[in-house]
Length: 195
Image 1 (cartoon, one colour):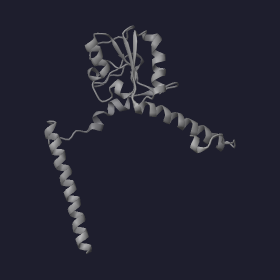
Image 2: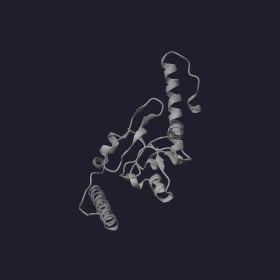
Image 3: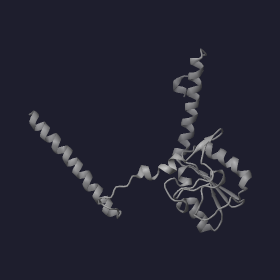
Image 4: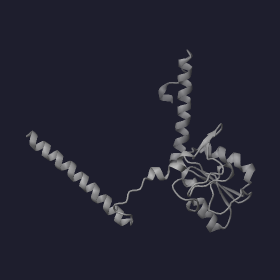
């Protein structure tokens, strides 16, 4: 009985591994990727990730100004470039604020949606998105940049996760405050279910 169970377990594991390998080959053939080529995706994005932010007292983090890399470049205020050409910060146009979808974290400068809007509408779009931002940080970014760029229009890119981030951070801050009060001998003002 034990031998039968071991054979069945080995068979199941081998069948699973072979199925996953076949699926991988099929997907690579479908997307026309090399079958035996392996790309280090983490290493390819390491430069962008390592220099993707610097501390900011109000926002938590911002993109570094004048960052240059292969496909992810910024100008003053950490604004993402929309192409490879020289793009000085200008007034007017459209200000796009948001999180990683707006900044285009996984695409080249000219492939972000603000860059595509700029090309199609023939109006300057200033991409001030920052990866990982919640709604609170997005609004503060817009407030910070409005006097600098004086846009004719502001587009705010948010989705469900952006709202959740802001709520989660607020709950974490409230929880830390309660814990600090208790650690310092104070009384706790809220119950855990209220958090």
